Length: 122
Image (cartoon, rainbow, N blue to C red):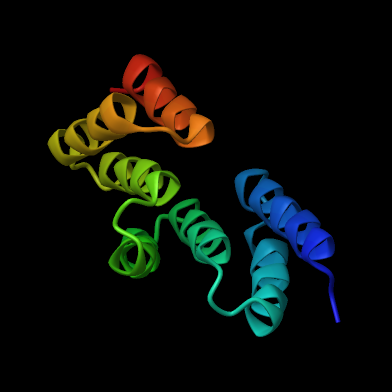
């Protein structure tokens, strides 16, 4: 059985692999993590990233929707939803979502992502 620290390390590798051009390898890691950490919002968010880096915005939106249905205040999921909106060509929704994270956010990682998107992309 994997320890929580090992799960977190694998999740970090999956995020890096998704973003770094290795979505298939990331999917394999996520498939394993879902077996030992099935209700993890972080795994679902990483799965969303894995979908949106290959332009599967509907599946990414679905993954983030599951996280937000369980925890509407999950700022990291909301920031990634803003990314999905932008990539899907819905810049108005992206801006609105990301501005909400910047205005109300307490999660530094989510706020940093939202600020960067607003500054550099939108």
